[in-house]
Amino acid sequence: MNLHEYQSKQLFADYGIPVPSGIAVKSPEAAVDAAKELGGELWVVKAQVHAGGRGKAGGVKLSRSLDEVRDFAKGMLGTQLVTHQSGPEGLPVNVVYVESGSDIDRELYLSMLVDREVSRVAFIASAAGGMDIEKVAAETPEKIFTVAIAPDAGLQDYQARQLAFGLGLDKTQMRQFGDIVHRLYRLFDECDASLVEINPLIVTKAGNVVALDGKINIDSNA
Image 1: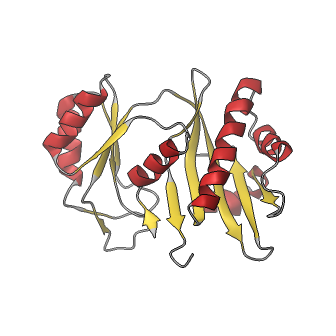
Image 2: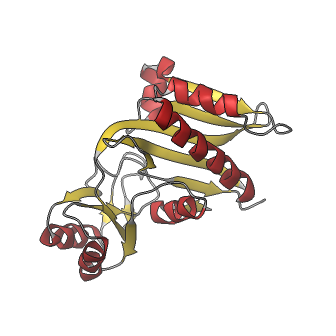
């Protein structure tokens, strides 16, 4: 079972992983109401489909007014969003996610998956967040590093530090990141996930580490 971004982020929040505030809606007027409830002067309207590349396909829009929130939601809902992962027919947009805007300093990549070859859960991280990870792997594989977790020992603090060092985080960010990966590991285990991906995991200009996007696949056979 694949979760939408808004569902993944709710699960992140349930496990104490920091995410921007957001509300899932199904109409343009509900999108405006959501923006009003969230407050502020900057919102992101995101089409909820099971495919990467939404931004390049017009499925992620930055809004600086309530009129823009309404117009962007209206332009997405009821359409077929075609991305490089959706196939030529596209995927239907029945829900949009209205989220508070974030002040981004850096974009990182973080995921967890089951490495079937060694029967271990592995963290995959890269400082090249916000990009197609397959493209990064093909063109600059040195920017991606992996840490495998022994099932009998679980995630160790030194492994969290390895990941943080590889991402070039400072001491304060390393502590935040360490807390996030431990919570992510618990979520992965308790929810019988087969994949958890955060792309991007951002560092804000205030120095906070936040999951800006989220993708979770649950093993329905578990």
